[in-house]
Length: 109
Image (cartoon, rainbow, N blue to C red):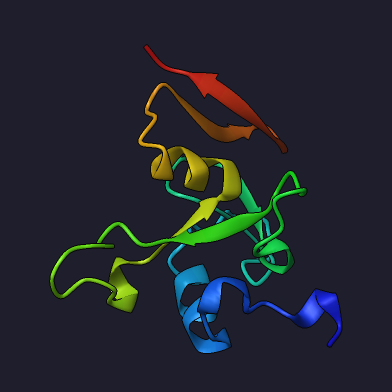
């Protein structure tokens, strides 16, 4: 399968990935089918789902993992891959967010 169209790593099927993508923030002046921002404000690129080597790669975060009744599609969140890993590690000292047309790590404290 062509790597550019294989968007189903981590066990999510294409329909779930599309629905989660649509939860990311749209940015005026950018094609929402390709470019959006995650809830931390980081740029994500639709075709870079699951690509941790990309500056705009993203993953699906499920904040309800381990909770009874968890795993509903509405609870899933699209996150820049670094924000995803930060959430998994429960680190809240930094987040990747947009700085103009680039992504940058912001330290909080």
